[in-house]
Length: 102
Image (cartoon, rainbow, N blue to C red; front, top):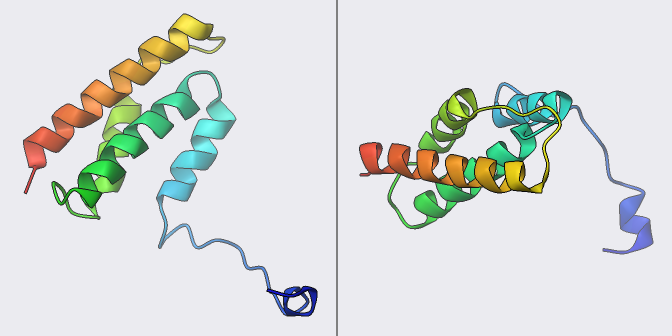
């Protein structure tokens, strides 16, 4: 891509109806604390499971949403809190994958 090509780029508001996880990501960022860590961990498990043909693409959203809903939230976490949140999210999301594996 050249600098001239960049002049032709347009920006549009993201379609959160088509991409509902954007709302989840925005909410996690607003919530702060351990929420972004939990979302990231659940996302990594869900996407990896999809890429391994264990779940459908459309299952990614539900796994992340359910994990976020069940994860304990800590407003002002320390390092160990992040470690525990990450571990909880990975284990919980993995159990959800096992329940719905195709």
